[in-house]
Amino acid sequence: MDALDHFSIPVTGLHNGLHEFDFQVDTGFFQHFEGSPIQVGDANVHLLFDKRPDLYSMTFQITGTVEVACDRCLEIFALPIEDTQNLLVKFDETAWEEADVIYVTKGIQKLNVSKYIYEFINLAVPMVTTHDDAGERCNPEMLKFLTKEEDVAEAEEPLNPFKDALRDLNFEN
Image (tube, rainbow, N blue to C red; front, side):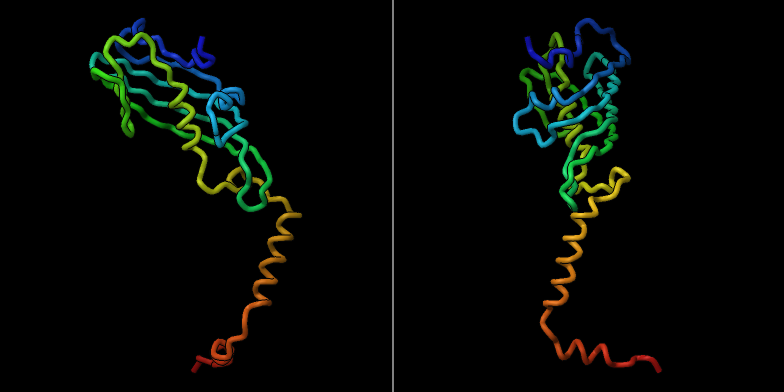
């Protein structure tokens, strides 16, 4: 039995129309994906599943937190995430995927959405993460080191006589 089987939707047992599913994602969920950039997290996923005769339309509403490293001070913090993603499921002779559409074989018994939930949670994390994203402040001890290096870089800047001469000019009338 698959450990992520509870993320499966029994599509053959559903009548046409709108259905709602709720999934809880925790730290154990991310351990099922090798090399996951997210190791610790807690999120709620509300899935609106619209079953039609020719396709399925899914809307994933994700809210929660994931642990990430601050790109400024390197401290681990809980980043709040909130995102809504849409996915269409169409039918074909073989199963395959493209950007916002997945193709499955007609007569599929159940559809496991764990892979898509995982991808959408990863997409909800910004490329650059800082404590600012969580309404927090960076580690002040680490910021001291960053400030010192900036001061040292300015002090080590080579002297430029042209730049100094321009500073001395008064451009006011």
